Amino acid sequence: MPYWVSRTPEAFHRLLRSEGVTVLNQTPSAFQQLLAVDLDMIGEGGQQGDALSLRYVIFGGEALSPATLEPWLARHGDEAPRLINMYGITETTVHVTHHRLRAGGEDSASPIGRPLPDLGAYVLDPVGRVQPIGVPGELYVSGGGVSRGYLNRGELTAERFVIRTLLGREQRLYRSGDLAVRHADGRLEYRGRCDHQVKIRGFRIELGEIEAVLCEDPGVARATGNPSTWCPAPSAS
Image (cartoon, rainbow, N blue to C red; front, side, top):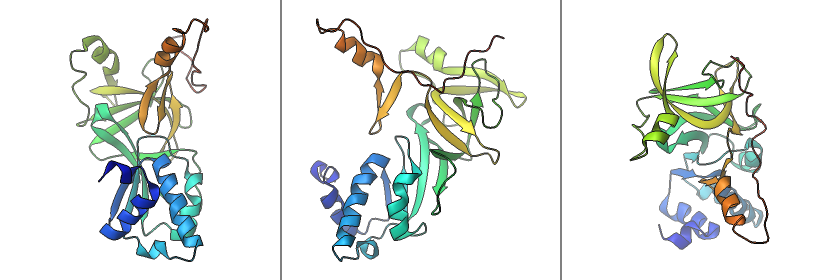
């Protein structure tokens, strides 16, 4: 796909129709631009919903707010296409969980659903204990998708790829740095970061790097990021 088409919502919508695209994978923020074009064209009397051949729209790369999809669901429903939110991390060879979004609202601010069959997802406290239902904790990932580590970064690998005994067996886990809550039915909800890292349009941004650059300016004495308010307090034990 030409770069300019991927960055021009009108041209991108036209491509989806002309090529009969059936599966679309986008960040939520990119889809919002496509949604605006789709609704504008319908408002002008077109029937663009009928022209689209989409069977699935898969979201990933950043947090998704279900409320932003209400205009799309009101127009297209939740069957054609089906909307799927997937949570993933590069260090676990991308996708970890999946959640199907349906019309009628969600009881979660940012639902990421359940793990894929070959992976495990655990919500743990700062000392590695499983958090109770509804209590935020850091999300750890296990299973065949977990990579071996960072190339030539032994110290960072040891920090992020850890061994824990869970469910009666020793497992190798990746510490995601993401906060999550598990609901009573097993679904996971994303709650932000444990550190100062943020995501903008799917890209990881370290606020510390921005702070360092700002402090190079002679007119700036100090700079600081805004840590997550959901970080669980360290355990006394």
